[in-house]
Image 1 (tube, rainbow, N blue to C red):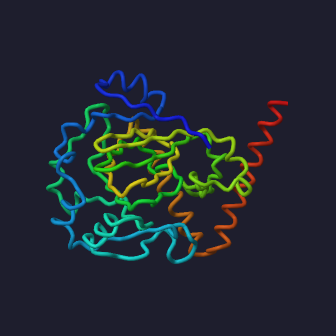
Image 2: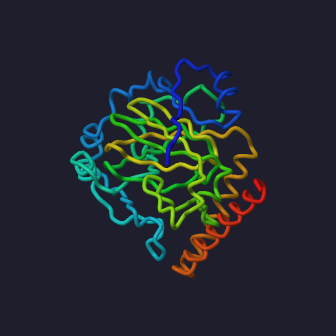
Image 3: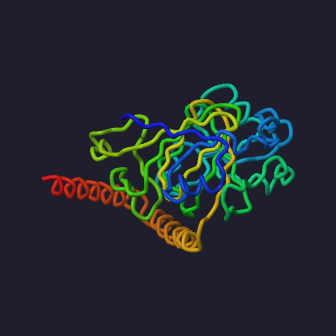
Length: 288
């Protein structure tokens, strides 16, 4: 597949951001949103290893969505320093993600600032670490927040799809996930994905990707590295939908996984394929 590139901007004021990107929910990469952060020059793999290498941290891999007791759970715990050595040395599919690092190291909160590009930022940050070649499944953020993802030291690629393309991505019911491998799609298994139209964001050191609420994204570590994610809500309606999503999806999906395991996985996949086929049939009728 070919992907249009997400544009990069700088010196954007809040009104311009609102009119051009926030209101239409359009992804964009800021070249300078984090330019005054101390973290841009301070944070490296070695920095985290020296100060926090003794932590025991949870590791995730490509088995994250396999049904059973390990569903969406860590595969192993490692010393943070050992993991950082591992990703610095080369490729691995182990990832360390959604970590509220400021709870463990509140002093780091002084190394970045909440942007003034919009209102509604949540007062917590998440960090993501990955080795070269690691990928994060195609998904949208379950809490329905806008995400501002700042990458450090290396390069990361994010492939994005608008919310209305869920059927073409084989959105699994009762989840915020899809299992199409965007980098190497199996078109025999997922024929509707040929019709999907995506964007490719290439984030370099110090740049920040704006991922609008409910946009699907597939994250690929083209090089080992790490990112900081800040989240923002633009309305109470978005917050309410996010809370409802968290309660409904987590409760239903995790509960049924424990009860039914592979049968639940099969049901979700079959439903996703039926929805994709219906979507294609409807579009064929419209174009006929």
